[in-house]
Image (tube, rainbow, N blue to C red; front, side, top):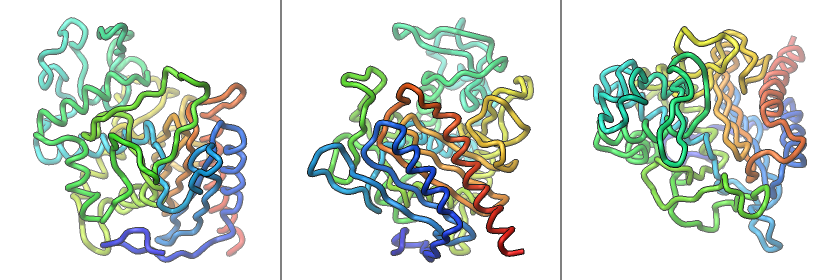
Length: 353
């Protein structure tokens, strides 16, 4: 079954060496509040694992999770925003990521935003938050790390203002349309292939919907296969079937370490919103055994995309959960997901010896 309908078709070579990954995903499925899950691994240019579990919602007549099921990817959407920033940088719409944010958004409060650069936004080191719709500074930009939505909102505004295009416009023109992606988008309304997100409790205040289709809000849904191919597109630095679909520099910059050198070594390390593996860090979402040069992005729905260039591998897991129930440590779980993937590869190498 081809996953990409136009320019890219990979063979299915189901590899039982990755069975522990299925077991890991099933374990997470049982530990979070959800009705459906999936996992897909691309290894050495073949689909080595593809599994679908459960249903798209908790309703009795719900559609089963399948290849065209689209999961709410939550913060995994930020990898697409990172691409759009890198695109704007490559084409000269943004001069430098070390430019002050105020140079692009001069209407922001100067006394709060002064000293904050685009690099700080991309690496979650801006030190800003919002209280009652008012911008507040928590710490000096570049001195610490905090995962706050205010930086993402500023980035999407900068993209629109400098390029004249929305994040969605850039992605559709550069990636989705050329590669035939039809299961990756921002939706204003639900349809039958979109999962229902299972909330922790009724009226969960963290859950938000949007009618914007510009790529600036948390309403992106992607199928398992197209999320894996998004990772594969990065793994191959934008080159598909011998054709460079986007300049490789756009991918390389977005997935390389961009965190300010002033940051404490145990804080998370980022590229253009991606989490990247460089020096060992205590506060990271990437597993200890995952090699340097790998990069990953995780969403509040526990959807995860991990790219390991050293082993030529892309690993995806999808759930329609939302947040963490009591007793579930999502960071520990996602780290062990990556470590399980890399352990499978190492076991395969030992078997071949």
